[in-house]
Length: 189
Image (cartoon, rainbow, N blue to C red):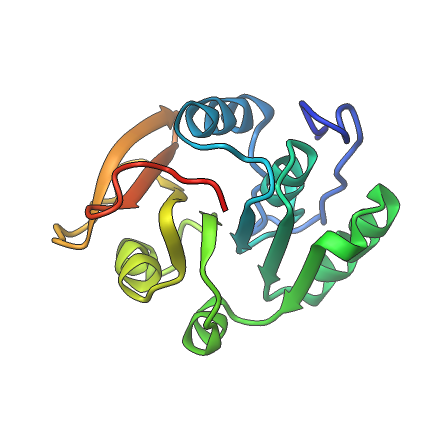
């Protein structure tokens, strides 16, 4: 898998040999960033990459100008490989890798991010509640966007705090984009 655009363009992002880690396909990543770039300026923003795995989404955001990325990954093996990739890419000062459970991170986090990626395992039991956990939990900055990559067919409960503003399907995978309902316009940091 390679970074598609920006200062790391063409650089390889290695992945662990673990069937529970599903790195975002190149085509899906292109779609993600096409949708995002039409709705927000990536330059200088803060990014949270939950269930980071290889870190391909957060690294792509850094490559395209994001100012900082926090990667949360429970697997020690995946975290070590991601730290090595970050060091090889030369973006250590812009990156934090936290080896911990996502729910534990969200319970203790007080920082707000402009862009949150969440790519949980398909069998993760809390995926449908993630928009509430992240948006209602105040982890998203004003004008921010939450992307959840999930199994096609998953239904998200209705909420007054957020809206699903677009989604894209790639076979068994769906990319769902959410934003707080009171923050319709993306803003710069």
